[in-house]
Length: 94
Image (cartoon, rainbow, N blue to C red; front, side, top):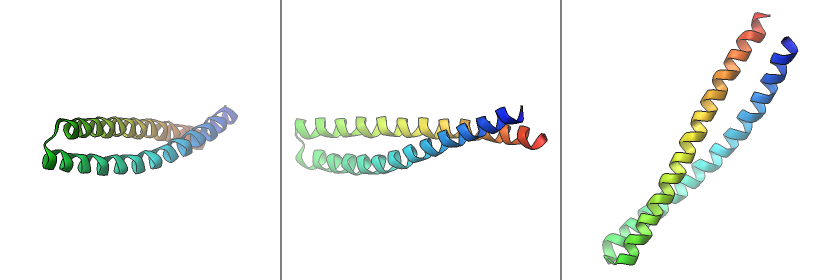
């Protein structure tokens, strides 16, 4: 049983490392898209053209999608951390 727990711990650790890397990338992308959204909002307000408004809405949708993706990554990481804690408890109980 200890071998199984140890293997699971390694697998969870690898998945956590991968997801944390993805989260770092998502954070950078979200910051970038937030800047673009702010820029398009200002352009939309200043120019008051339909095209500028469409560009702003598109930028908002992209930012929202990235925020949802980031939230999903955070949730997956939290679940894996909880699983890792449980496995560590089982491993140390042996």
